[in-house]
Length: 252
Image 1 (cartoon, rainbow, N blue to C red):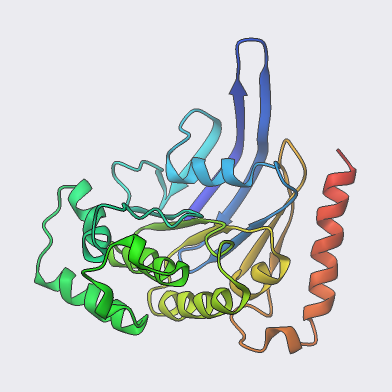
Image 2: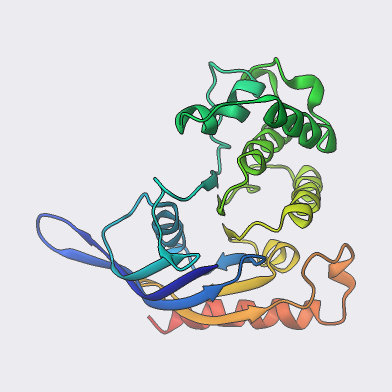
């Protein structure tokens, strides 16, 4: 469970400080996948960087499973927009990299689990390839394997599907949710797409313009429904979120 209490982030420069985020407070349970959506520059990625431990200077409190969030203690998976694969390492080496970084033994069970996830994502035959030999969709699947293989306490994604073509993106989203449903890892993902938020977000955190505040946290009734666009609530939810984002922008 993630608990954020009165979180604010300020960026300091030589001349002045910038209030980038907050104050915000929310709770996300261990089986929640939360979409973070709002105007450009509202602090979505800043929030993700706090949750990842990249930003550790802030006001307020961030707890993971009732302990202060600490990337040296907690396992935190991160899928960036460019997939974060090291070009000089093979697919297999990229997938086990988090274990190497944490100086953990890569035993037979980890390799077997990796192969199982790869088979689910149809990339098991790519283990010995390098990232420059993969398509965008294949790179995305490798990053998904790496993230779930480490069994993180928290999984973060920053526009992780935005670089993919529309058809490949929908396929990658569905594959991700299939794996997520088997593991139920507490997940946060930043998106600019209302449609993506409605398909992939069990909860949708809607933010205002800078400094980003939470306008509403929406419990999403069309989450993980394959024909979600045909759901009677879809258009109303889409319009509601769009109006909130526009209001959050206009009020600043």
